[in-house]
Image (tube, rainbow, N blue to C red):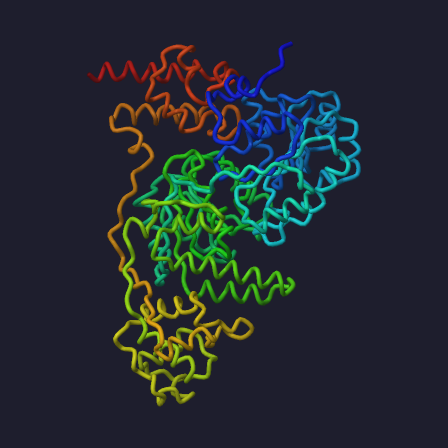
Length: 609
């Protein structure tokens, strides 16, 4: 039997004519027996980099994946392609697990997905000793890093793979890792001899938008959902479980299909909600960061943050769950001063060592600086990861509508002086009350209605003062008393401002602009009503088939494949085989069904005319 080639598998199994950047080189490296470290943006095609070599090389590819709940869908998607795949985890009963083990030993599997905890069990390692292994793939490899955002201590033990199976090639993959994280992956996984493949971090289809939270966050979120993403799937991230529950319940009351997800919910509820999100169209998940790692849903049209992420790594990873299919998507965020204070306090109360806390503080500072930018956000985000974009992107809020700046030197001096004269122990709301000259019992009790800064700030309103204080904290001119009650304290960096040695240009508080309705996916792709109708009918047919099969709709075909069917109108099996994403197995299983739908739409169009 002729040995399959990577290009042949790409076409016949996956239905694609060409490799994406770096895929061919990575695959050739693994097929040749070499190790690889792959850093590729979400949606860039990382999984093909180990799936195809596992099918070319003799034996079974062992995939280490951190999320048990998603393995079933990943395996089902591979089986739809005719790939012999299975998983071993606690979801299987004893008999089912034994059958998978026997298939592994018999060489009847192309790919086997295993959680790191399971892989490290002595019995599992002994089983692998008896099997023929094609390669080891370590997915979400940033989990190995103590400085990363999804640290999993069991990942550190994976260096045993090199020690126990030195001749088996290994590939470690992640979508996001800065320089220190990459170095730690190499060190902890013993990948010093691995070739590194670092693709650009840019996700040009994602529009980055960040605004100040002026106290009406839920209403603004609702407008964003209804006016820009009506009926589309997305994720809303909140910092706390309580906020997740409250936000989900409120949005449900507004008639949206919304489900909560956080670690405080019963496991069965989390599982049901996650499966509905993956398998149904137009479901919105409101979640803490417990949700999302490894999510493989391609048609997530937005990721919204109602709180500040703790680092740019976390922000990039979370926003990267939108638009995996390459179509336009939004990364939308509101944040405020309370987020900064809460995250600072969480860092201070952590049981981590001082070095770890210092790194976390730097990461939060970088996140804050990113939010307060007046220049292109994408350029700054890519630069943080060591990537460069020569020209502003034209697809972020600061490019589309340049923020106004103002000379805030004198108001900043007032704000800093107020911190000093009140004893450096009060929070923002209190300080703003003093500056505005409010008649407040606490202010009078402490005698702060008699200090020089009382009532001198009436030229700005409350939101403008809060915006100013937030920017002073972001620039390091003020620190938050993280061990007390969030009082503000002066730093050495504020002295030149107080002395008048420097001028301070800050962002103006953005006035709420009229919402520009984003073009919907269908409107972007199609202008003719008949095309839009056919696209909808193809999605309906896909949904029917997915329910029959018990798999997520995107496992049948991605939206991009359906869109190409609309554009090319295949009329035969041979023409359908030329559609990107239609491999031999799917052509056999679904080709006729979708040809019938296209033909029915064509006939209807003739009748209408």
